[in-house]
Image (cartoon, rainbow, N blue to C red; front, side, top):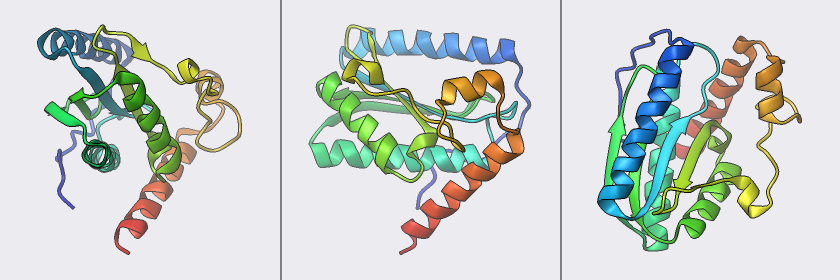
Length: 183
């Protein structure tokens, strides 16, 4: 199983760095939209706590990228360009896809719901005009927490679960994915 990115930094990231990273990602997205005039997938990993770039997040990221590439191939969608980045704020990928954004988002939602690691993936889909499509655009509920039935946003805001519990859940899901892949 090839790794798209490796050698994690394990750096502790603070809020200003996260905000700067988000702004840089939005700038890259706009540049790609201007250059390719195509549907854009922006992939990141859901990672609780101050360490966003770890062996765990990179392995989860690599599963996501393989799943997205396989989805594009199976759907007959051309990937015009792909770029992986590895900032200290966590692995990222951009893919310019020659396919209707609404179909790509629906397929991304299915991936997030059906793959054992899908809950740990953040697959944003942008229209060629730059609109980010969301689950609510398809009348779907907000994503659930990793460990309880509450919405993820509520648990994150309230810090309802210890970071160790969330990381243990991520490790367990990765173990399940590894077990499935080796069969």
